[in-house]
Length: 76
Image 1 (cartoon, rainbow, N blue to C red):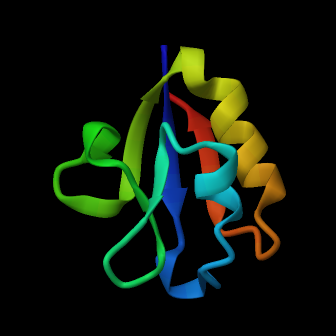
Image 2 (image 1 turned 90 degrees about the horizontal axis):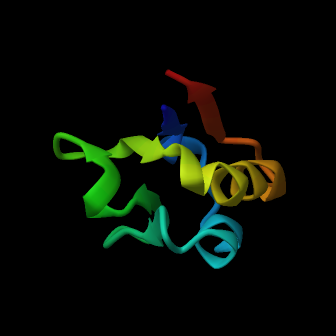
């Protein structure tokens, strides 16, 4: 099973919470906003990812820790 992760990048405040909590999936993009690491991106979309289920806790923790709630996590 995998999870779909989406970041509303235009609402990101660059607080670093997600890439600090879960650097396996999130990183600071060249524009300073949160991005999905290349390994898990869907195509070249910095905001869309497919993440394996063994990273569920990491991704969920990052989403829960986002102060502006711009990270969505859904089971596929």
